[in-house]
Image (cartoon, rainbow, N blue to C red):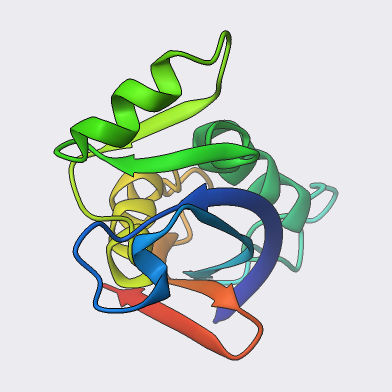
Amino acid sequence: MQITTRLEFDAGHRIPCHKSQCRNLHGHRYAIEITLSGDIIHQEGSSEDGMVMDFSDVKAIAKKTLVDAWDHAFLVYENDEQVIQLLAQIPQHKTVVLPCVPTAENLAAEAFRQLSAQYKDVYGNQLKLERIRLYETPNSWADATR
């Protein structure tokens, strides 16, 4: 069985070597969909009976691990030194330095990497992360899959 839940967050970024406007500082209303697979839990009297995982638990893990860190932050590539220096001049600016250029594809892969270990087989139901779908716009997204 697979389940999916969605969270949204706002963040800025730029693609330093992009041939068009994305080389400029700008932001997006991102959405992230988290798809997990596992067996349906059959534990009568348990809060999770009939579920793969409680959606509120899926969201809480994603928020704590990733969304809270990226929300209202500027996501910047570690080699984009000019932007890192610029943002460092703003007191208490929320900057997330990443090991990759913050394209939708790289952000989806990074999210998958960070979240994969967080969704463990807690209930003995073979729980695992299957897919991260990261929407950069309502019509454009990237999927990182197992």
